[in-house]
Length: 592
Image 1 (cartoon, rainbow, N blue to C red):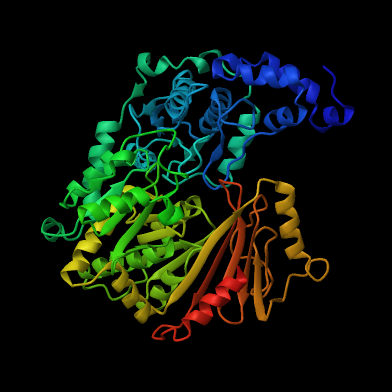
Image 2: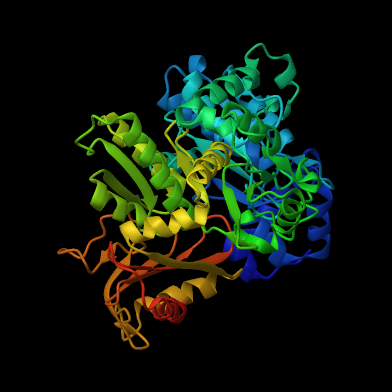
């Protein structure tokens, strides 16, 4: 087989192809793929698969399942876990006592046999082969169960095999630290370094039978489910009222793990059981009834849920994503369905958690010990709450890994975290899990709706009430798909060199830009020293423009999908009504 000198020079291609022949791809179910590509001389595709490795993004390692070092398969999961073991054994002298937690969702690739369950067992096998205790769940669980178990069991770390709401072809390897938060710097970089030093599979790493034979393997399912549901009562405020509600709820598990757990959560809250969408209740790795397994997409993917709600007379629809860490909500309003955005639902949940905290702590005068958090691309509504109510508000970079680690810092200072969110329908009610949690959020939303119903209010009407008190917040969020990294790089380079080198735009059409923050380069024109307060993120793109009109617009690349996302929001002052709402909306559209 002949390859060009240029290709060989790019990534030592001949060496890699020879190395790929030696790798036991047959054990990963992908031998045929690699042999076919080698036989056909498909240099570009082999280069894509073999000349790069996955890196930790906003949600761990995530990629398509398939053959190659850049994709998710048995080999890359074993290599990742060997690297994780190496790092943990250095960081935790008592790793042999602490152990790690391993969970998984219901994803799978039938052709290769690559499933989340199998990958979880291989993850466990690597650790067990080194005499590290492993708490391996015996069945699929919601993603938030892993960080909850890490904290509850005192484990050194946790691994969740999931790709959340990504397309069916994908899978992922999400790592949680000892504090229950997703790993961040410097741990992510150090683990990647250890992975690079641990590429040769250990003999016992392939032995998934260790999961059934090793005395160091235990199943935390019953214990963690029980503890989780008991602790869930900490965010249940009106259990007696819940039992009397006339409201009906529909729940879709989106072919994922959520059905049983949401049913249990409703029982804990003494709420009537939600009506499941039968076609989407049980796990299905093909996600056969939806074009995209992401409930954030709105009405287009909630069709079956809305249709069932109409048939059953339900006014609230709840949809958890496939790994049940996010929640979409819709409400019947004047014979039409309103699907709430993540920002709108956060306004409601933030108000609800604060209301009940104040009811339970009437003696509290100083609210400085109370905290709420949001990512910087999310609505500023919690900031508006804080300015009036006097509690502490923190803003982080996008991704719950930043929120989770910030919560750990705040709690060490004696702060109480009531609520945190990211606009992509990720909510954390209370602080029992330092990560987004669709299971607890579903029960909390249902209780809030039941309470409001006793006041002759709907969720949508209460949202309007919130905006009247704290100021209207109008936001528009969406994305464009781009599979070509060089194109993405050119787009952001142009923004940074608009009127010359290192000169950003000073206007967008007729709208004047007053401040620019670029966390990729560390530039922030609003700061005296022009340096960002938020941490630098050189490996991802994110630029924020603040307009003279009060609109804030952010462009960023997704950490989990081939998307360029944009976020725009117009915030009116508290006590003001948007008489010219149409103008604000048109301005947001122009920014888009």
